[in-house]
Image (tube, rainbow, N blue to C red; front, side, top):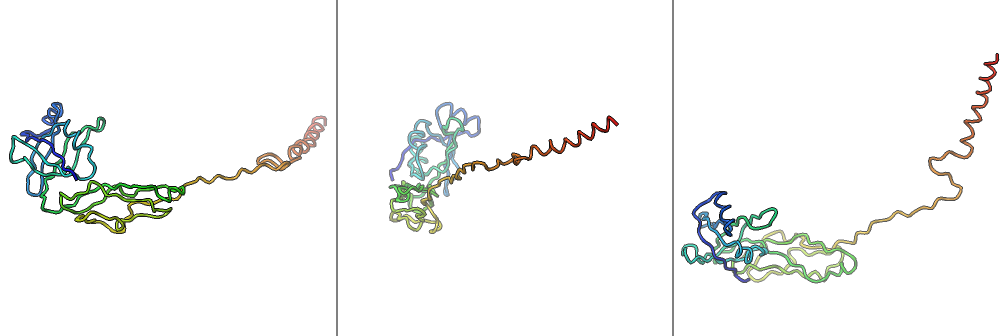
Length: 232
């Protein structure tokens, strides 16, 4: 994996007000820390950060350059966190984690799925379960990504963590039975068959034949009785 280089500078002040002024001047406030270093406030050019670092996936080794500060120059780091503006997406703050090139460490590596699965050709749906995995290796051996060929997958087939071949020196640290990607069966909405009405069959909610005439027939004697009573 290619090492990225960025130029940093030490900053003397901290706080929201100073951070806002740094951003307005075209810099990203950042913090450099590590197991053998206390937190050190630094800055990096916004343009350089967006061009070289902000788009990176997974864990990438970064060399810090500082001609004015020999103590910070040539330090090797990983980006642990980037805080972004919720609307513009621009970087607001970054955390750099200093690493020892001779010590193994745990990092996240993106998964890249290649090929067209046989199950997809048959109408299924490729369903990635994870987009990255945790591995352990030396900082100089961090893979840019792990490639998984899904061509052989039929419907209901899956690739598990134990099936993935990792580069030499890189070890998977999680559950070997963990599913990384699978092929789901096609989802087809079942349509209910339309039943045509039978000619002559009663319509639901309508009175049966002759039912409407019955009340009128029953009302006639009552009306006649009422008339006879008034005359008597």
